[in-house]
Length: 447
Image (cartoon, rainbow, N blue to C red):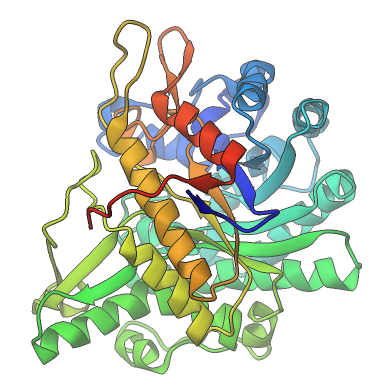
């Protein structure tokens, strides 16, 4: 058995819009609005009920306890705290998270709280959302309310989940809410998300808050599809687009020069003001990494960034994503070498498969193999010197998978969306053994 370091953090993760439901007890978010647009979400699915976690949280937390999960990463819904996007607090919303934290405390489960996981109040979107610089102060105020209310009960805070998704999928490609397809909007939104992160970290430090604060980025390893120089250049551009555009401001206080040049045809960057980059680079206590797959790039004129995607020949998940665990170890080691060895947590890692219930069980061997290989990759990176402190499996529950609706199942726990029955999958029981042993059985690598 390969063992993880002593005190390694184990957990599972969810997000508010994907599981909570309770639409009648919060304001409208951009995802509520997006779901109403025909063709945007598969089957016209929406998050009004989702997993009904707002009512079933005691059952869900008991399930975590039964599975020996010591940490739970969840997000707070901004529209549940400020339903109208103003500064009038919804005490009922705060009370829900009070109850949630109380239940976690009673079961001995520690919380890691994400402050923003994509469900912006629609009222703020109506004022420009992440393209409006004023949102930086609104986000800072929202966070201050939560720090004041829960700061003595939460020790680990994550400002944003996946700024690339918020900015690119929400404003560049239009695949996510609010659904814009505009490159300047993508760049402006990305900057304001990062700036809001930095301002909140600065305030957290200035008020000498207890606990730790960081940010979660979705990152992958981008490889050239072949030995052609043009393919290698395409891989560098894709890495700049997905990884360095967000890593460099946070850890180096600057945007990557090559990407500034690429993007200069779309914008003059006038939204970057004096002092912004210094604020974005406010020192974090950790970096959260969401890792799922890899990219193989070649030169493809006319494609975004003239970068085309090729398959690497690896098996795929139900999302069509290639499984390549070495991409995770390569990434973690790279962060150690290029970004001054930051404290790291894998805040999401997991896979969707076409799970089915048979005789009351869900035998998800593919998911177990996926998790096994990626935990092995984590150990490889730790042995190479990466300062990886913890791992959160995505997701605890099958849930609303954004534009894919309820068609993709990432959960360790199966959810029947008609009856809301929960069934721990075999992967949940396997993960319980990993937690208990603080290690994984040695297996022959398949990648």
